[in-house]
Amino acid sequence: MKITVDVRTGSSRAYIEKIGESLYKAHLHSVPEGGRANEELIKAVSGYFNVSKSGVKIISGLRSKRKIVNIISI
Image 1: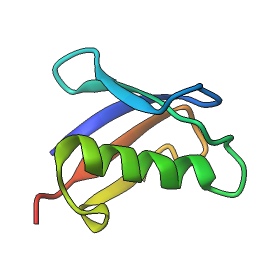
Image 2: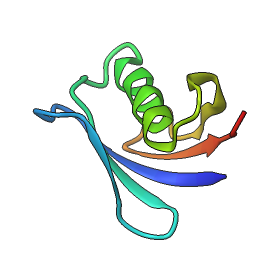
Image 3: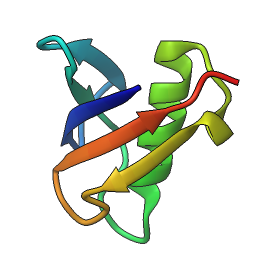
């Protein structure tokens, strides 16, 4: 399943909210330096969809606030 995620960094609490059919907004603690925000996003998405972290891949937008994420249920 592919979803689009808008990422907001520097949030006081980390959570994900559903905006549309396959559009989500992720609020993350981490700053976008050294891939920390991408790692936190993978962890948050895996928890939200109850899949392992290895089942979540960012396929587009590694350096963007809008990312396309592929979720594979293992």
